[in-house]
Image (cartoon, rainbow, N blue to C red):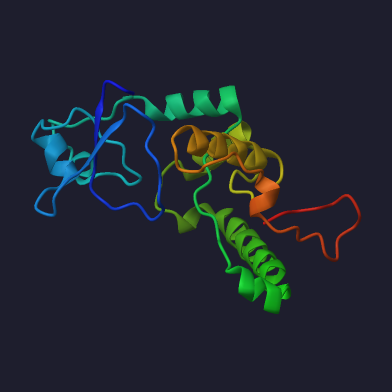
Length: 197
């Protein structure tokens, strides 16, 4: 990593301290990181979205791993990590004033997901010829719910890994525990059946 020069198009939302030796430059408003890749100004790009050159099948740009699905499955099988997509945050003063908010939000999101998953059992709602096969393949590899909510099992392991990376890369000063970041919402549950969100 130390021999590479990194470029960023966006400002970070949090303060951070770069590890020594890491070179990071913010590109100007007149440049696009995707266009820099197409023009050969940079060798590679990490991006959370499918970039326009890939969508347009620009022959100058390709995926690092041509069989990325096989690579992602192998990574999941090797580590048990399926990256978390979104985390919801609630300001502490809201939780202190209305402690029912995080619990009810969690329950509402869980119920909404169950309704959506039930709806997804109907292959006619998705315009994919082999939709059911893809659904069954995902279940065989990742179980019934790879999008699990809360801080159990897979999510705990993923968060601990992210926290380790964040500390290693200077985004946080110390390794925090997931329980420091998430509320216990075991209210109304049987003892031993705890969830954190």
